[in-house]
Length: 452
Figure 1 (cartoon, rainbow, N blue to C red):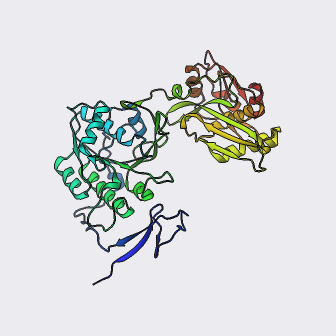
Figure 2 (cartoon, rainbow, N blue to C red):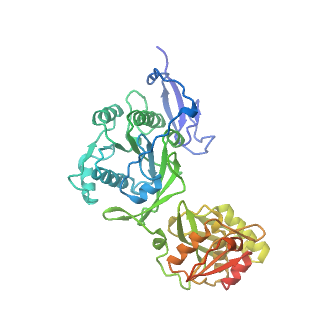
Figure 3 (tube, helix red, strand yellow):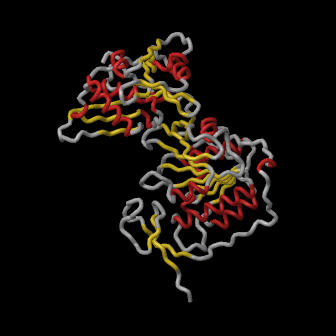
């Protein structure tokens, strides 16, 4: 009898080792290796008969018909709606609202006449019914529910029902008996996702798969699943606060720069039409280290508040803590303020945070972040009706940003009376009433305009 082959696989990065290791040499995580039996033949791949190569010039483009979910924020984040035959992977922290969001999507789709199959692998039908009642989902909603964890049974149900959309909650609980490893292991997750992707393409059915995340914040079985599916989305936010942000990590059918903002209520997730109002709802008068900026997130302009706190360092090793901005760019701004303009930051701890859990990836937040740091250090507040935009170079110059007029208009809508912009954008500026536009070429000029 042939002895089974055994491999030890890291559950974090899928590194394979011939023996068990306490620390993974690739991702340096501890106690992540599990023993798995390797079979030379787990399933048979059927050859495609009659497939012939086609000239690239002979390929005909068809109109892409998307399935609107009825939730505008979600539709915009995924690129305009669900593409038939696509596979979406939705990840997020436990309790963040993944199941709530997918159940609301299923309800809206069923109201629009689509056939939905909800595969509940973690909750019983009674538990699902209780949650649906809390979310206000009608008893007449035409959602088919199956509480099953075995892959073959789920695939059989999908083929018999032929739904438009299948929701899997969650992939870590689905297993295939022929694979000798526990549910949730990388081998099980990979193989189950592979079969689901095959069924989605063959039946032209959309699959929305919920996936758990690891301690490092990535989807369990991370890179394997991301390569298999068409789109990857993360539902982010603090589970103890009300707002949630849906962010695209990968999307073959739309942009990855769009975000959707929701607010968690007693009746589930509700769309936030104007996120800027949500993140700027508090009064900032007299608050030091607080500056508002207008950043471009996908096709929308989002106003957010950047806060900074500086305090004397007593250990000899100044601390820098950054949340929501690029850590390296904050180090760069601290160096510019210290070496160019004499701000004594080398002896101060510096903390920078973007309010509301928003993450700003574009460099237009350089100028407001630098002003926030200067404001905290000087213990002087910036006028609450002032908004700032601009990228800061190593010599302290303020560089232009794109879509400047959109940013100014959004600041005006929310009641800002003054906005500081790069001088390089002067030629693009349109005449906008009821807001004073101040153009600067150097960081120190912007600091002086804020009376710091």
